[in-house]
Length: 204
Image (cartoon, rainbow, N blue to C red; front, top):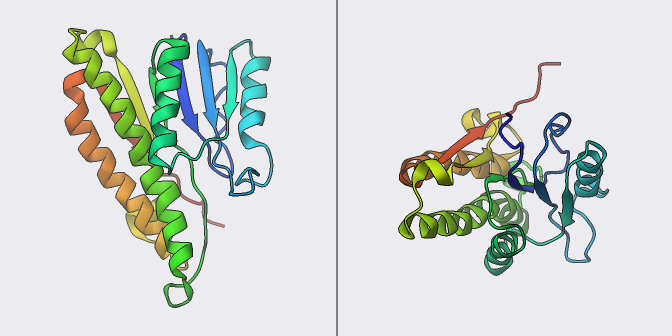
């Protein structure tokens, strides 16, 4: 049985989605993609719907969602909706992100704030509300082995080693790496594992 097979998976999207759905059979996947103020997907395309279509084609269940996960209340509502509609959240995959690449001397406050909000606050907000749900289950008497939940965050090689022209992005990804370490230490008592991947560009 795979990590997501038969489970409720909540996944936030990045500009380019990681293709890892083929062969996996979640009971239901909620695929979120950050939307711009005008309501259009941040990817400029339909990354979330593409992933949903892939899961449906493989025989799974999935729905697309356009909420802003950097908004505290919207992130809370997303987790609560998953609990009320599907009975809970078993796997949270945080992969949302945008880029506003500039040298530090050229970066505006708006460009810095936007990247930090979507990457770092977006990861924190969904983690926080999911953690509250799992802690509630634990306090209600559910054993850690029965909660058995997962958080998978997306850091980056830029967050571990820095990347010229990506000061805002590198700082956000470094924060995600630290957040993952703290989350892992805090949530293991509830039966939740917290890990991160750190992709990097292949050498040319």
